Length: 282
Image (tube, rainbow, N blue to C red):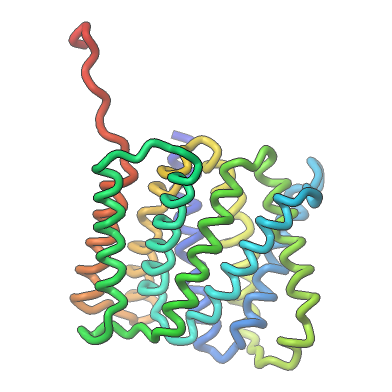
């Protein structure tokens, strides 16, 4: 029950990232500046949470996870220049699951025909979603950036699966990510920033990202790599519904159909089949 509650709360936080980023960028805040504020706010909160138990900053894996985090943040923020909150979340989610599935194959996890067929169905839904026309507003460049963000998140989630100290590792990742953005300060210095955008980026970093990722890292070690993302199945659904209610971004019929195809494929590929009845008949 505790695991289910943590997972549900983490889902809401992760879905909120799409809404907060879309709202902040629409208000006029530069995506690069938004990402920088977001990761810094997340680092601050996580550093406070992890201060008593220590923060993990060393090791090649730490820098690899931080780089994956930065790739995700950059692609995510830039993509929301044109993508609706729900559409962006769906592209991101599908890419994450396909990426993690591929990593599970590389790691040698078992993948039967049903799982392979499910991921094929999800990939078909994603391709259909990204095809031009049909009322789906997906700029090719920004859709590609969201796919890049999804690959970054997949790599980051994969690193979380093997994180021995979730909170300490997450804090370290965000602090190193903040340092990476600081090193690129001349690139985004002078970018447009609005007070509302600062608020949205701060909430996204401190609450939706910092605390949300800390929760996610507590859940991931208790799942297989290929099934780690199944708990995230509700993220794009939450984002689409909230985007329609809060931002007025109502998805079209094709987006809903393609999204349903993606989610159905992922569910087919990641949900474990029912256990066989044992020989005692109980």
